[in-house]
Amino acid sequence: MSEEILAEKVLKKYEKILLIEKKETQKLINGIDEIQKKGSKNRSGDLSSYSLHQADMGTDTDESEKRVYHLNQEMEKLKKINLALKRIYEKTYGICEICGCLIQEKRLKVVPYAKFCIKCKSNEEANHRRR
Image (cartoon, rainbow, N blue to C red; front, top):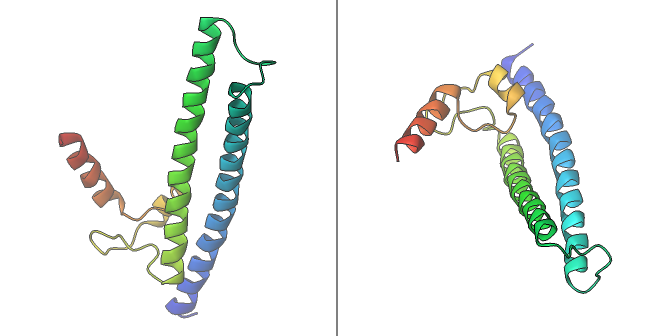
């Protein structure tokens, strides 16, 4: 079996993994969005589940902020997944965008949308911490 066919099989494997992850991430985003919309309706005049006590209002606000944070995290993940799918279609998937070396398969199994090898990602994080 030639390397080109093997590489194509590997790309197909990760495309499938990423498409499943994309679907799950989109489902989470939709769920959080639905909860936020329901919360907005409650704040816009429906007093049936509106908190009247200050502590309850603070808890509601805190929960809403957590959902927004989680929503942003999931949307960022979705962007990374879409970019990884683009790299698959362009046949550049699995190649570190900094050094050009192959990203280890054990890293891709854990983070299928990774765009840096472990060494470059570690260096990037170290530089980020220094700033």
